[in-house]
Image 1: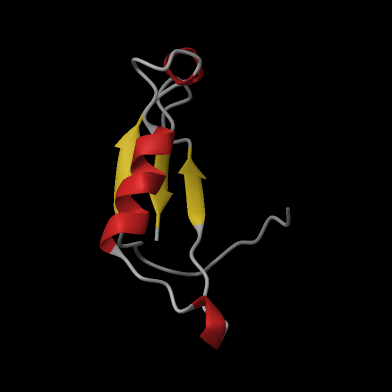
Image 2: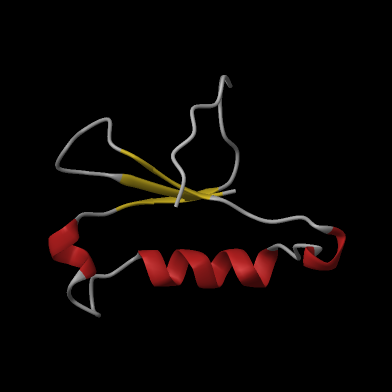
Length: 69
């Protein structure tokens, strides 16, 4: 994995708020469902070299935001 810094004002995509404790329990986990929703709603043209990115933002250390764009 490579960490990069982007100069952008905003990201557009699906997102969820979660935490490590919730992700350890299938009943409260959200990241898997987020990726599943993304895969159903967006068709990525991988054969054309396109890809998607997942971002974890940590504006509040207790509530990271996971975004798939």
